[in-house]
Length: 105
Image: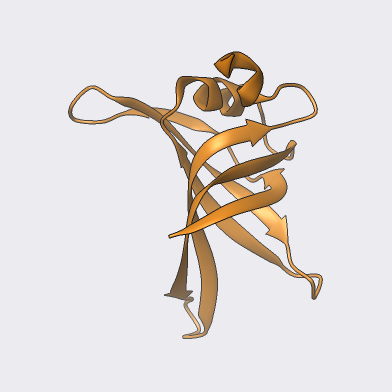
């Protein structure tokens, strides 16, 4: 696990879900640019109420920054090429509209 700060844009829809034990969480994908002009998809999950609220207020293409526990991964596409991926457990979300930290006071 890596303590990380990423910035990018929401890719697709933000979804709220419930676990088997009744806990509520939010998932989304964030498209982040790389140095070479390509992009990487970061799979995000958030359990904190304020971070969930912040993410649910966003839509496809909205910009944001997230901090949290990052796990790098590799997956293989249909052509057999290895591609990087990231999983992030978000602890804080910052957007132009709302900062989840504002609600923690």
